[in-house]
Amino acid sequence: MSEEKPSQPKLPSTSALDSPSNRLFENWFEYPIRVQPHHTDYAGIVWHGSYIAWMEEARVECLRSIGIEFADLVALGCDLPVVELSVRYHRSIQLGKAVVVRTRMTEATGVRINWDYTIVSNDGQELYVTALVTLVAVDRERGKIMRQLPASFQDALAKISASIT
Image (cartoon, rainbow, N blue to C red; front, side, top):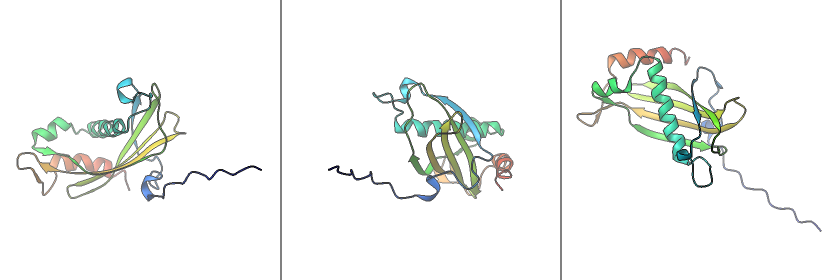
């Protein structure tokens, strides 16, 4: 007599985090990563916080690619702290693996800027992580939310927001 093992319970769907938005992999900025020892735990699996650091690196490089240097924003008195972060870990990544962090701005409303992320294998066949991040522009000196983004920043963001629609 064979006993059937109960199947593992599945996590309930969390909509946008289960798979990247409807515009699957269109207009993504790609940032390659190779998993180094300092990215992993003792088992050689990427530590969950490393993914968040990679996403920030990709976002900073994406902004640089459209002419926004983060150091220039700081010099203007603007900071962009994360105010919301949702991450779905689909599968783990091991030491030595090469992956691509894909990011894109999905919406900029006032001083709130939303970003999508996926972390995938180099060939795009394996999905490791999906995430949504919201940033808000803050006046560094006063520590308060800005009323509007600096003009040069708004102009540069217009370049990538035009590719959203």
